[in-house]
Image (cartoon, rainbow, N blue to C red; front, side, top):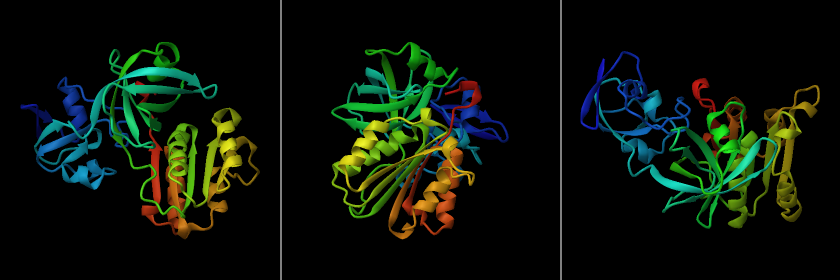
Length: 323
């Protein structure tokens, strides 16, 4: 049993209990969403004591060295003093400026932070509804002119989905915190080949990376593969087709699962068969966790170095707090 000291008060963590579960049992509220060590909503800092390395997986080297870790997957190995993430994860109010439907199931939410919120398009943030306390992580599809663009899939029975679909209107006040993630366009050779591949609203960070690359004058070829179970799962199709027509180096390839041949050419198969210049390509993979991990593994086994694969797997909120 480990002792956790939080805000100067000591709490006991049972054998095998995570920091998040122990603090919640003590009545302490911490932001959290995926509870799987991916979204980083529950980031906290060790003030005394070393967190297990597994609780820092996926964090930047700087954050890990500063003692930050994810409370939802941290089973303490010894007593620790813990503080909230503080200045590293910004937390600020944001006003909804507009909502519009990108497809039958995806809405675009435009937020205006009520102060400085430093982020990169392609990273992800935590969106918090102050009234209900619901927290969900969403990729940043764009950040410019003081506004942040999110793409939100509306899921039946989803708590945040229900709010977005029925209650949130322009002027609605929310809270955002973050950002996290390393899926963004930066420090790439402008002549290097880029492959963007994802499913569902995994298109949001890919859309952000694509637009950043083009805005920064990227000269190398860019291929974007967007997978969906059927055509209703695609969105931004006209915008992507228009970019393909106006940008000679850009190719858009929608991958519809129910239109594939008997060989089962899903997104993983399409990408691995089409992309053969692996040594000169940087990959960005976003969307469904299982598919992203499958594709990452397939590329690695084909010889792609891990530092050339940037992955952002989407982990759904637990069933008790459905997205």
